Amino acid sequence: MLEQVSMEVVTGVIGSLLSKLGGLLKEEYNLQKSVRGEIMFLKAEFERMQAALLMVSEAPMDQQPSILVKLWARDVRELSYDVEDKVDTFMVRIDRAPKELHGLRGFIDRSLDLLTKAKIRHKLGTQIKDLRSSIEEVSERRDRYMVTQVAKPADVPVQNLRLSAMYKKVDELIGTEEKCDEFIGRLIEEKDEPSKKQLKTAIVGFGGLGKTTLAKVAYDKLKEQFDCAAFICVSLNPNIERIFVKMLRQLMKDDKYEATCDTAQLINDVRAFLQNKRYLIVIDDIWKASVWKIIQYALTENECGSIIISTTRNLDVAKKIGGVYHLQPLSLADSRKLFNLRIFGTEDKCLSNELAEVSTEILRKCGGLPLAIITIASTLANKKGMENIYQYWSKVCKTLGSGLEDSPDVEDMRRILSISYYDLPLHLKNCMLYLGSYPEDYEISTKDLIWKWMGEGFILKEQGRSFYEVGKDYIDELINRSMIQPSRTHPDSKKAVECRVHDMVLDLITRLANEDGFMATIHYHQPRCQQERIHRLSLQTSNEEDVKQLSAANLCHQVDNRCFKEICNLIHLRYLGLRYAGIAEIPKEIQKLQLLQMLDI
Image (cartoon, rainbow, N blue to C red; front, side, top):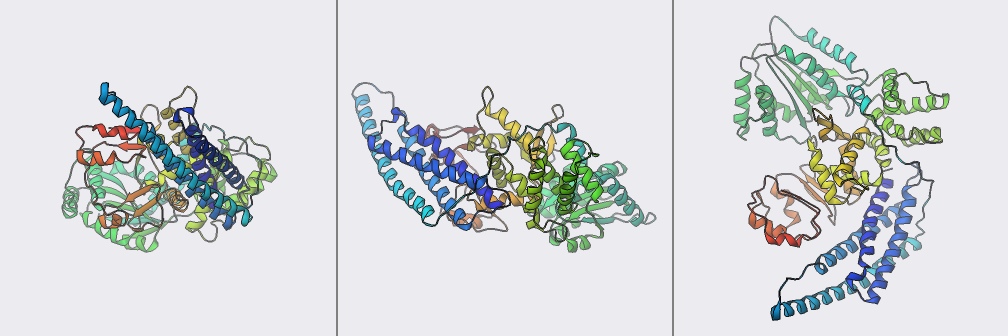
């Protein structure tokens, strides 16, 4: 399944290249006849490679491509990047406008410009001839080892879903209210009212089980009974100082509160504020006991009847926090209600005997995990009007493999989530892979995200609409498919202003992005780059030692005017964000960035 996704990613790379090779054949570039012939050869070869890869990507979901196919696809991808880089460099240099000078100086400059461009054309011709031999070698390798493909008829186009009316109901999740009442009842039983001691309890369960949702519903029901409250997300790689700053802002109800970055001082500030208050604090998604140990220093035990709720996937961490509440999966009845609601808009849908049977098997394999159920149901909803719907549902069910019933581990969740990812159109696949550049639990501005997609060329042109308008539709579609989650909405339009990626989905797309060579990620748990060649790099670390392997140059802690001139030498740059940077003026060197699609100042 994951390898099939890779095939379509490579076809996207080739598609971009074919467009540029076609542009090179225009008369304005005045290329020699022999060079034009070589370019036409390259274009024809890449078109055939793209067709072969599309056939592989369209194979049935339960058929994995061979290792030979994957190796060949990797070679094609790297070759495509090589050709595209050389074409981009040529276009930037050949299109550079000459200075508007007159007289003898103007004549000399124009003559030099013609000579320079002649040299650039000659260099391109030499490079194209060298690339031809590489392409012939890759093509011969495919034939030599008989790399074959299996094709299948194309599915009906993905419908433009309009699930906003039911989104709120799905967002509440079937069965959550009952579990919340049970959980709050447990809190009341455990709380020793006469002593007013601080109560600490942890909701523990597998990722995607609904721990955060349960904690949020309980938090919303209880917070009015306390002097102050805060809901804080920790995640796998937490910034402790940022956690305490967010906690103080929520407790004080002051979003503009500024504080020191010293951990000890922040702990003292939190303790001082909570000293004589009855407080409710939720610490969501704790992975390590060491992190909890630091956080609890700030949570004053003041005999005011405060409550601390946490969520974690780790039972050992939960036991160190305090009381443990084991969140159970959804029952089959509730699973079916959620499944039906997501697909048909109603909890009580009467299915045919065939669909009822296969849906029961799908739900069994989802193991009562709300995330898995919503993800698969969203995929099936997209095919609601297609012919042979039973065959499609059966194929999806078969691809789920052993499922989550006996062993709810990460690999099974990846397999479930990969089905919905596989079902995305190619342009949305690239958009999703790009989200792997953001850290876990990051609140992503949808506006900034669309701009970056525009810079990458992921947004397709539609007649009469701007790229930004189309990009907003992409956000809506990914939300409807449950691939991303809205974290903040506009009060009037109810559209997502910020979004986030669920941990399990982020795990999947980060893995895919690294395996496909789409993006390399460096963070605390992977301080070494695993890729020989890097096309995109996401640095999710503040440790300079982690990235010294990439360059002998020192890292800039703050971009200034001097750095900006150096950035202008990155002629392949597509997106440049200067917000909050120390830039006083834009230098004339920015004209070198001929491929720049988006400048955010």
